[in-house]
Amino acid sequence: MSLPALEQSLIHNRILPVLSGLLSKRSACFLVGGALRNALDNRQTRDFDFATAADPGPMARALAAALGGHWFMLDAARSQNRVVFADGPSGAVCDFAPFRGPDIDADLALRDFTINAMAAPLGPDGRLGALHDPLGGREDLNRRVLRQCSATVLFDDPLRVLKGLRHSLTLQLSIEAETLSTMRRAAPGLDGVASERIRHELALILSTTPIRAGLDALQQMGLLTLLGRQDGLLDETGLDFLDRAEGWLRFLCRSHRCSWFREFFHQELEQGVSRALVFKLAAWFRGQGIAAARPVLQALRCGRAVQNAVCGLLDLTDEEPGRLLQPPGTHRGRALWSEDLAGEPRLALCFLALRLMIPFEDAAQHMYPFLDALDQHQIDGRVPALVNGDWIRRYMSVQGRDVGRCLERLRRQEIEGHIHNRTQAKAFLKSECGPDPSRNSESPV
Image (cartoon, rainbow, N blue to C red; front, side):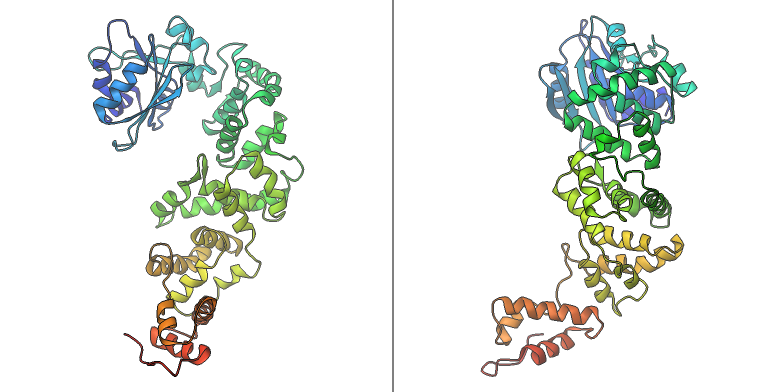
């Protein structure tokens, strides 16, 4: 994406020229930061940051009203506003903040790294003005160098140390020597940063591929302890399996089912923690178990959904991968067996296929029938029983918890391939649970 393409993206999202029309003579407004960096680096973006000379609140609220977006106050003390266009062409997000200093140059000088300290003014004609780059961010980006805006900005907010590591990984930048030295000296200040902010950056660092690079960067900065522990984190057995897991994810996301896998693994179970990261964390700690993973999950402040997902994958037994090679005889049997796996069945199937330790193409061919069976037979997230509890209560002398026990026995018989249809299911229940002779034994169709 070039700067003209960025301008077209703003127009496509209707942010331009509407925003320009809201400017008054005294309310200079600049597009700043990551959107410009990404455009110059040919990367897509949907997040747009704007810096204004005056309080941006009225402008942000007016933009939300004009385009049907949702306005939020991010930080009242700093007058930081957000407008979200969830129903727009790309779900754009616009953040607004006043200048950090008396003018745009002062604002840019107080930012973290030069690649994030560029600006482009919004003109009254609804167009973006020329790039304003007083600190040489464009040249640094071209040279693939990460450089601090000043000697003090990292001490002003030590979280920028983690942000710098993330930029170096995701944008493939080398850290300029003086900046690296400052990062090391500023790193101890992370002790005073809110844990939620640290968790967000750590999750982003661990979401990079390969994770090894992120772990190495944290180790070199002496920050592995931010993950709640240091022993075992760089265990070669775990890292080797993690490498295999990342290769497996790349394979799936390039397969003929790539669109489904990309969407599935990209989805977040909690803010900042995708299924892909959950999958990688489980692979990383598979040999060490839940006890080893728990401190990292706590350091990342993971909620119940993520903890349950990781622990569910780590709870999978050594026998379960082999069932992919000897599947139940029916599609419903495969779906029922998959549904009984701990955590999310589709995620568990992907993890079991990885653990087969066979070529990825072969592992995928063994896994696909189980995924297809779930898609075919699940309704509202569950595979309905061939015979429901109402039928058992009505036509057999079974009540209470015994109904559930009968259904579970029926489920096991179906998974083992002994039952293939409803007629066989009813016959099994009558034989094993016993019909009530006082009632009509005819069953409904």
